[in-house]
Image (cartoon, rainbow, N blue to C red; front, side, top):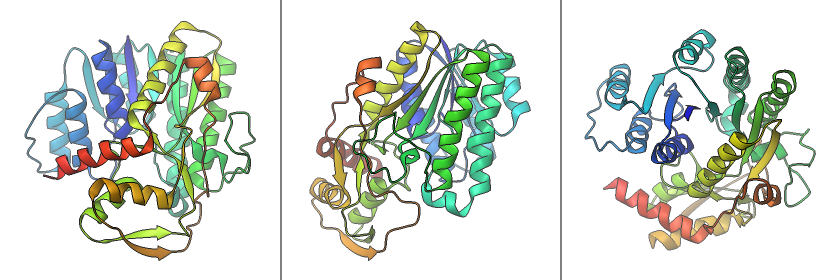
Length: 342
C-alpha cells in the first residue's frame, strides 16, 4: 500500500510513518516544517522514523531540508517540503504517485496560539483540509483518515466524552477548526463516497512530543530547576494517551478502512484514565527524582477543565486496546528525554 501522510515529520506523524514502513508499506510524507517549533526537531524526527542514524550538521533551514529530502529518499519513502494551503503544489504530488490512502495529521496545533492567530488556523486547518479532500475527489482516492481532537468537546459536562455528544460549543478557534474539518469530511463522504474516519485524539504524549506541550515543557523546566507555570488549582484534568496506543489506534483504523466501504466514523482515541494537573506534575517529579518549583497562575482562556474519552466505540469497531498507564508512560518519556539531552 502507498500512504500519503501529512505532517509526517511531527510528533505523531513520525511515529506513524515508522510503523507503516516497518509493516512493509510505502509512504509519502508532506510537511512544511512550520516555525511553530524548531525545524531541527522535525529533521531529527524524520531521520529516526526512517531508521537513519545520521550526525546531521545543521546550517540553514532551506538547505538543511533540501539535504534531508535527498538523504531520506528511497523506494519506500518520499519527503515533500510542502504547505497544504498550496493546492497546486499538493496536486503535483498526487499526480506523481498512485496513492491508496491519505492520513491527514498536519495542522496548526495549540489552543492558546489559536486565540492569538485565528485566521491562520482557519487557513491551515480548514482550507488545507479542503484542499486534500478535493484532491482525493479529483484523483479518485476513496480512503481518508483525519486527525481531529478532544478539544471539540469544549467544556462538556457529560463524563466520559462520547462520539454521540453534542460538540456545537467549542471554546477556542483551534477546536472550531477541528469540528469544521469533521463536517467537511462528511460532505465529501456523502457527495463523493470517500470512506473516512475522523480520530479524536486525547492529549498525546511520549517520545518526540512537541516541546511546547505540558509534559515535555514541565520535564525540561523541572530537570533544570526552573519554575513551571501552574495554571489554576491543579484540579484540571486530562485523558493523557501514550503515543504507542495512538499509533495502534491509527493503524487499526487504516485496516478497518481497507476492509470496509461506505464508512464515515468519528472515533475517540484516549486512555480512559483521567489525570489531574497535580497528579501529572507529581508523576514527573517521581520519574526525575526532583521537586517542581511552581509559579501559580490563573486559568487560561480556551482551556477546558477536563477531558475523558469514552473508548467503547474504538474497542468495538477497530479493536483498540490501550495498555500504557500514565505512570509507566511518564517513566518512558522521562527516560527518552534524559537520553536525548545527553
